[in-house]
Image 1: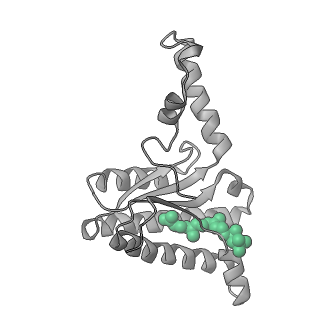
Image 2 (image 1 turned 90 degrees about the horizontal axis):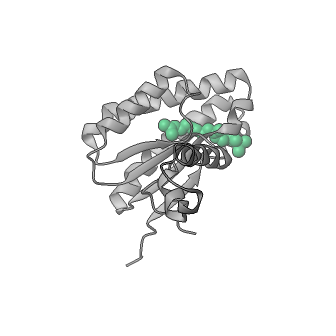
Image 3 (image 1 turned 30 degrees about the horizontal axis):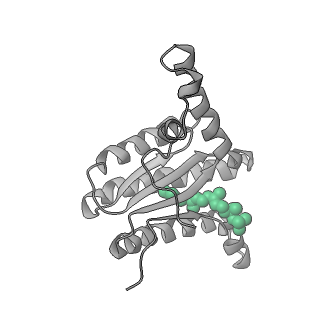
Length: 178
Ligand code: FPP
């Protein structure tokens, strides 16, 4: 019996190359990537995997063309909507990591709806990194802790590794296996 890792993290790369090789538009490559993820979630849940993180959109991805960013936001909204509709047929819990304020409101509302709808599921936990960047996460974490220091709630010496973990987007999620 093979022991499962507790957390697998996936970078959804290669969509453009997949499409280029087949003389297809890049948007179709992204769509194919989203379809692959849908199946992957079902398979990972069936296998009994507990945590999977997928990197869907990085803070750097805003630098892509307006057309590509807009197509990606549309695709994300479509698939998050699909996961909401499919929620009653699965046992997968979904949440999002990353900065949310810059995400279009209609997509953000769907993300919140999906998190709420799937919050009591006990199977695979799918963590979707959307507008995520590690430096940005560290910045936001430092700001949260600095505000507590400024308000006199804690002192600088109280800052510990546990406190940092508790203020990251990934709070409560075990580190991916290497
Ligand atoms: C990188 O491929 C991929 C992206 C920037 C977007 C991936 C996101 C999706 C497919 C949407 C997934 C949907 C949900 C709900 C999570 P690339 O363009 O860098 O391809 P390349 O490596 O071949 O250049």
